[in-house]
Length: 221
Image (tube, rainbow, N blue to C red; front, side):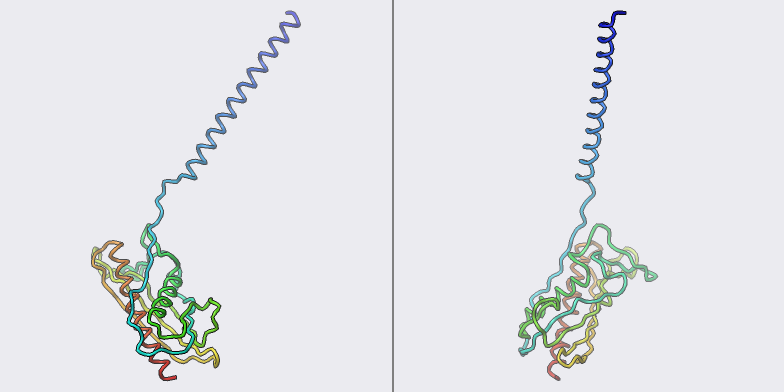
């Protein structure tokens, strides 16, 4: 075979390999891009997010010149989460699937309490403890209960909210009062919307009661 024919054959063979390689790379890139697209465009549904806000509370009969701060609450184990807790028979703690609060339970309770206390206008200021205000008193809060409780299978649960609080005088570093407030509200239906509405009502009742105890404690001091 002539040398020119050999070179032509080698050239054609090399070109075929290069074309094959480019085709493989193109297919590989297309596969990777497709995989990335499926990861970025996940079909997994986002959880429903629920926010609790206080209803308008009556303006306080007496106004205090004190600056009040509400601490970031601590929570019973299992409740320090944004998931909506469920207590079933046998003290089995569970969570509703596909739903959560707008923040962790302590964040929800702190925000709710601050907003309610501000609306009552009983203090010179009522703020979250991490604000820049130098408070006279701190309300140290613990969330004992914040769960939906099923008493029987298939029935609508009740929302149970229980708050413990210690009122602390910042100047003396002394505990002024120990407060406890609890409320339970049965949901109108075994649906998530109705259960969240029961939480709203229970937290409102517990917070108003805690506020009443708070003002009664300050009147004594």
